[in-house]
Length: 152
Image (cartoon, rainbow, N blue to C red):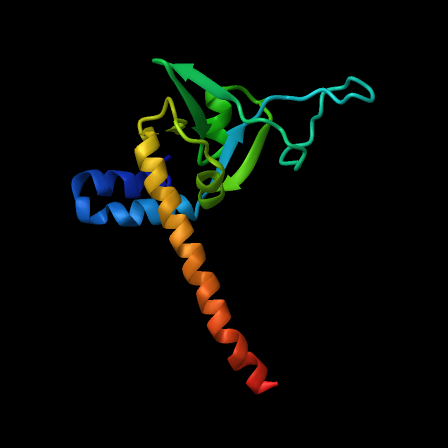
């Protein structure tokens, strides 16, 4: 079943003017990222909590001399790629973008008919968009602060 992201990707491939819609949707979508299971030092048991902010490391896949961060827009797609017991973190696209390391590639929905590979230049461009958006948002908040004090 196609998702909104799949539809936007297909539309962007047909009409370059529609590509900004895809990137906007990407930055505002939730992604499921397979993570490496960690052992706790106290009892040497595997942590099972999904989406726990414990510093779990994302699973990176080596291919063609590059490292890929695997991203899936549905849990089903993630489980089809790995298996039902895969541990994952769920993050919005803008957070994935902000945290992405230089020279890292992304594989979105790998193994589906709607897969997309992101190269470091494209990711750097998205990082810049996220930074500009944050800066503009912070500037707008600063401008609104005096107005809020006047109404109190």
